[in-house]
Length: 232
Image (cartoon, rainbow, N blue to C red; front, side, top):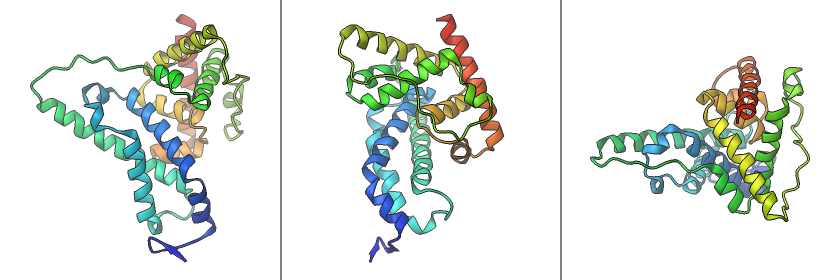
């Protein structure tokens, strides 16, 4: 049996079974990248739908399945294409903005508001874990154990108290501001590592660099975040 002309395989079956989860993870990643990218300040956000970009990336993956490198996991391969689509869309919006006569004075919205209000408890917990991580450092990265799974810190996503919600939002907002101050490439590496849960090798593939450089940048990024949060 085939799908889009591609013979079914165990890998294909696994991809199909996890397609909904992959789409959700793509949307999270693209939304974060969109908020953090300076080009978004010039863009008409209605032209940059992360849901549409995620769908386009998955459709591209299905149509080009035969071209996927054998050793590359489907989700990572499609994620890389989705990030490329977003980059192209932001470039197009930047060019369009330069041609518009009117000036825009829009301030980018912090991702904290989306995370706190949209009910995505899993993503909110990831941000809170990272905020705590940035205040204490990560001994595992410094010791070179980059491939150990990141199990986060203890945090209950089911928050009952309004004060707890407020405290969580403030923590996420502080982390968000600190993340925005990181150099773009370093920020991407830290976010992919701790918010997307990718390995160093996977990040190197996405950003087309080498693993040792990724490791160095992640350690430096955490150090920058610790400094920024200590000053806030």
